Image 1 (cartoon, rainbow, N blue to C red):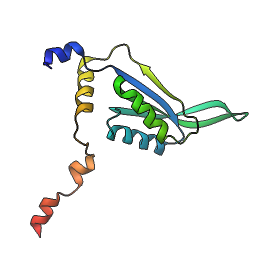
Image 2 (cartoon, rainbow, N blue to C red; image 1 turned 45 degrees about the vertical axis):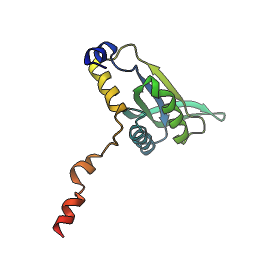
Image 3 (tube, rainbow, N blue to C red; image 1 turned 135 degrees about the vertical axis):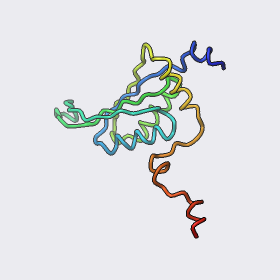
Length: 138
């Protein structure tokens, strides 16, 4: 596909998948797993206060909201992944469609999610010693 065709197409449609979980660690774990599996390009999470009925009582608790950014064609698989990893018996998982996404971002998402290479962490890239270099020192 030529660059002109990519710009005209603008990449795959970007959607958000939204859920809530009980704590920060679960939010981070779900986010990292979804990104490592290339089911999402990013995740934003933050603490929220929730009020809802559960088993006959009104509950008021702190939870974490998670907003995954992904492509429409990956969203169903992402939703299944979230449901499988979620600690709640009945998790709320919603897909929100976008009306418009800027083309450079859309193309970056498209290229990044289609790339088959595994991601590295900053630790892997910057801190972890190079095994070949260590072997040369011996």
